[in-house]
Structures are given as C-alpha cells and as structure tokens.
Length: 558
Image 1 (tube, helix red, strand yellow):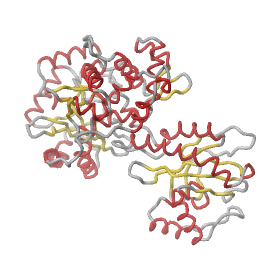
Image 2 (tube, rainbow, N blue to C red):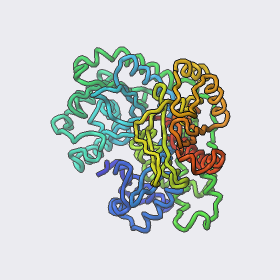
Image 3 (cartoon, rainbow, N blue to C red):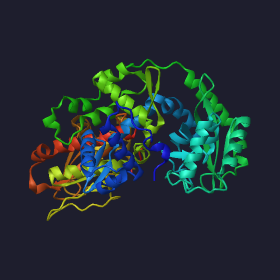
Image 4 (cartoon, rainbow, N blue to C red):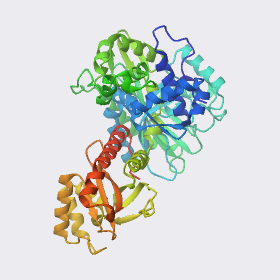
C-alpha cells in the first residue's frame, strides 16, 4: 500500500495531460513501493494497466536507463536518481545546508537530518548518520507521517483547515501507516489527533519540537525550523539519538545550544548570494541520442511522449529552481507545446507547482525510487554491469577495492568454463601482484603511492612476480598513464588478468574492475585487444550510475 498523498490525484487529468507520462509514473511508483523490484505481472495488477501497456512503459524506461529487466522482473536503475537529483539541486538545501548538518553530527556524535514538508508528510533530503548498533536507518527520500516525528509539528503549525482535513482523511484511510514503509505500524496512543495538536502548539511556543519515541521505541529527536528571509520554514534540522544514550528529557538540554547555532548559520547560508549559474540547463547527451534517433531506430515499443515528459523534470537544477515554459523547452530541446503539456501533466500529478508563469519541482519527485536507489552500495551498482561484461567476453569479471595493502573482492560474476577462476567475495590478495591492485595503487596521489610501496615487503608469489620496489613504481606510473593494468602470471601460474579503474563523480579512483582468464588462451596483446574495450565500457557504465547515485548520498564501497 502506498501513501495516499503519493499516489496520482483523484481529480481527472486536464485535457492537455500526456496519458503515457501518467502511466509511466504509475509504473515507477509501483516499482518504488516494491522496494525497487516487481514482476511484470505484479506491475499489471498494481497499476491496473494492460500488459501491453506495461511492456511499452518498461521498454521506454529501459531505453532511458531508468529501469532494467532481470528475467521476469523490472528493477529500478540508478540512472533514475537524476530526477530526484534535479529536485535536490534546485532546492539547494543539501548543497548549502548539508555541510553544516554534517559538521553538527560530528560535533554532537549523533545522527542529524534535514527534512522538508511534503503534503501531510515529512520527507528527508539529507542524512548525516552515525554508525552504531542502534542507529538511524532512514534514507534520503523516505517519507514519514507528519505526526510521527519532530519536524512534522513544526510544519503543521502553518497548515490551513483544508490541510488538516486531508490529514484526517489519510489517517482514517490508513490507520496503521501501512502506506509509509519507512516507519513501523502506528501506535494509536502515541499519535492521536489531540496529542499531535498539543505538540504543534508546544512547538509554536518553544520554537523547537520533541519526538519522544513517536517513530519507534528508543528513538528520540529534537528539531528546529530553518526559516527563509520571509520567516517561512524551508526545512527542519533534527538531531536524533537513542534512549540508551540520552533520554527525551535530557536530549534538548544536550543539543539545543548547538542546534540553535547551526540553524542560525543555515539561515545565513540560505540568504547568502547564490553563485552565478546558467539559467538554462545543458541538454543531457543521452537524451539527445534518443531524441535524434528515428522511430525505426527507437523501435515500436518506445513511447516518445513518455520519454519527453520525464526529461522535463531534468530541466531544473542548481540556479534553476523556478523556470518559465520557454526555459524548460530550451533546456530539454523540446518543442514549446510539448514541454507545456508535460508541465501541465506533472503539475496535475503533484511533481510540480506553478506560480504565475514559473514552475518549481516539489519533494514528491523523490518518491520515484530515490530512497531505495540512494541506499545502494557500490557492489550493488556494479553487479548488473559485471554481468553484462561477462556476457560479452565470456570470462569472469570482478570488482575490488583497496583494503590496507591488499585488494578485497566486493563484487564478482563468474563464467562457466571447464577451467575457470574460482574466487569468492571478501577474498584478499596483495595489491602489488594483481591487476586491480595496480590500478588502485596507480590512482593514489604519488606521495601516498610511494609510501605504501615503501612499507610493503613484496614476495615472489610465482617466478614472474615483480618484487623490486623501483620497478613496481615504474609499472604503476605506466598503469596510471595507460589507464589499465595487465598482470601476467604474477599472482598465480597460468592466470592473466586485465583491469581498469572506476572513478567517483569527483574523479577519484574508488574501485577497479577486471577480467581474469587463462594465459594459454591468447597473447597479452590479444587479450588487450579483445577485452579492454568491453572493460572500459563496463567501467564507464558503473561510473555513470555511481555519479548519479553519489551526488547526494554516500555510497558504501563494500
């Protein structure tokens, strides 16, 4: 069950609405509600659409990179995060306020969140969490009922009677909060209307709000509003703890002084002049690719009106929070009439608001799978691309990261051969003797690279292993220059591997991907010619997904 405020509105769509766009968003919402994966049959039942319609929607979404298919299942792909990233960039809240929230979390050694109002709910836009046995598990994009936390009482203070009526209707329709998968079932005694209105009044008087285990037993929080220049709450800053550390009575005294200081700094940051940015977005090259393609090239299953409607959301971003129709059309490369119909549709569905001639994204855009996708790890992101690589080259493919002076395998897709390389996840090898290790070492700053080799005592693992430190340094410089590493029988006799780096959105090497094969199958030069293009393609695909996933979320490397 999805949150009523997150579903399509009950009012009939306007005559200009784009039907295929409405249908595609219903499929994306259903996929998000299913944790990012649904069988096609479940999508048909969940959306009420015909099977042929769902097939065309999925085919179009797959072409855009927003969904992939695995057997009979459709799976949300990290590229879909570009829609939520557009909202977060346009709001500027994570960019301007996120570093201040992170600093507060470090100073207090507690989890800190930024949340915005979304209908009668509260949606997270930034998280700075502490790693503990009992710690905050919410993700960017997660939606909570307004009455189930500290920020909701702050936002509800500005509600009109119509807002309260919608809130009551939602609670009556969903008495256990089943439509909010991020929270446990509601406990009526803690979230009654009288209790919520009392907390709203208390927050109005105090200027801050307390959550005494409203979400789940043991979890406590204090929140304060962050106001814009007109005195309106833009977001709420929360400090979250556990009763094993601080009781609800003790938490305000412990955190309010620093919380107030941080809120004041955030309000100053919001009022600071914005850096000069282009008023119009540069069209995404991937969009331009399909927009230039002929109908025959796209295939009969590709629904162009659906694709055009979805990319309208990407016109918004940093410095482009409010755009007129003309700017949206220019940013996306769409005809003005096409952009207008898409904007009208998105406004009807609640993903946009219109203020005179200007349109703005709403936090509802984050319901399109952002919470699930922002929680992916680097191995999660890499796995489907490794599988595609194995299909192309018919040899096993792996990903590894540096762990001390070793590499550690974090993702792997084996191939089926009579003779194959058997390695399990978590396996460690000396970095100096492996192709992935050399790629990772070559990606380090020169001083760190030299320091690592200086403290390493290379041992000959085979008769081919390079152990001389000066020779290894020279090899690493060659790897850095060439952008790949080929290691021939240095780790094990008969084993040859070829690796390339994987960079994050800042250009830092965070992992390596390789293909391992038996040396007897071909010469080293033949291996490069056969494998390197496919390896580089796989790495580029991983990097594109990692860039989208890592813009506003921290992506664990293992």
